Image (cartoon, rainbow, N blue to C red):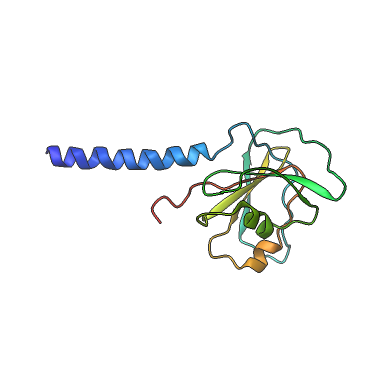
Length: 148
């Protein structure tokens, strides 16, 4: 009986730790959305518009040919605010983030709080390059592969 109780308690701790890692990758006040990332209209891209919203943020005006992109969360080694070329794609932004592990999904949150969830695991780079990032967008990379 004690053995079963120990197994249940240990499992709960492991699952709770995974949930904490995911929630820490969430909106901690540094992020807020802006206009939705532009997706191709040919119907091949597997992402979904959601009714999920995050807090809106104020962003400084775009610089000459550069936009502000905020990267944070989970397995992203490079996190923070970056001024990047206007025509940056999701693939390039994820390269900049230097992910230690590719998540199943990422969130692109616009400055006004609207969010789009994109599937990135096993997606061809060509499809990720079709998604354009807007000024003031936040890219949230959650820990969503806790057990592989």
